[in-house]
Image 1 (spheres, rainbow, N blue to C red):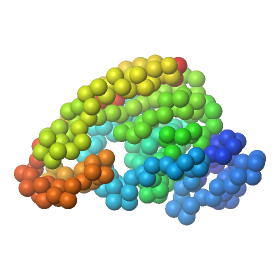
Image 2: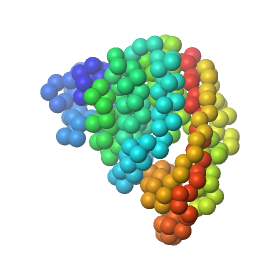
Image 3: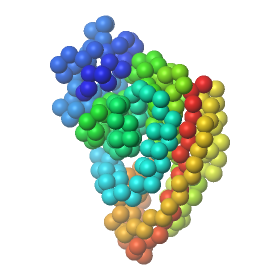
Image 4: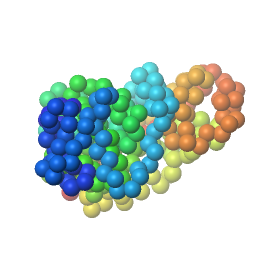
Amino acid sequence: MLDEVARLLACPHCGGGLEPADRTLRCSANHAFDLAKQGYVSLLGGRGAPGPGDTAEMVAARADFLAAGHYAPIVEALADSAADVHTGGPLLDLGAGTGHYLAHVLERLPAEAGIALDVSKYASRRAAKGHPRASAVLADAWQALPVRDGVVGSVLNVFAPRNPAETHRVLRPGGHLVVVTPNSGHLAELVSALDLLSVDERKPQRLADQLAGHFEPVGSNVREFPLNLDVAEIATLVGMGPNAWHLAESLPARIAELPTPFPITASVTVSVHRRS
């Protein structure tokens, strides 16, 4: 873990700053956190058991799907938006998954370091190796973030849980939150064919309500593009997201019956919000 990133972190038990020493982070109250052999540090705070996080299978599926470039337009839109508004300072990817999105944004911002925060140990293992200037932290985004006050220049949030109050706290004054959310038409053909989870049409308003009081909207843009996937790629796509928690036993057979290639529409909104 980069020393400069380690010093941005806070003890999940007492909130004190952490200092690196060998392969351990330690606060002034002598709470210590060892760096896992896979390269991440666990800063779970013990305030009740967190959600299970993505499984090893889900993380592997996401890594394969993203590495194939299917979501490249989303990556490019996110990197463009983040680079346009970033005014300096480290980046925090909240719900970072494999660290794929953070790695691409860091390539656009060569002077910055990044924190990939996720509650899945399987995701954190991959994120720890995602980019030379990124460090992975195992933590629960729904709880107090183990990050010091006002030390982050920008926060990324891609298809992941949001914690507006904590995000506001860790951002510097004038810092930005860049969010990627699926639109109601995202993967609609697949949702219809396989009875998958759909996206609430009220999602944009829910996001605005959630961020109100902490952030001011700066702008947004919609990215919509076609995906022509074969059966194996569709299975990977379904297996990497929330539908993986609700898979019916009959789903593999139903996927196998789809025509190949199967045309699907990807539709997301990339929105930028300034810290109030």
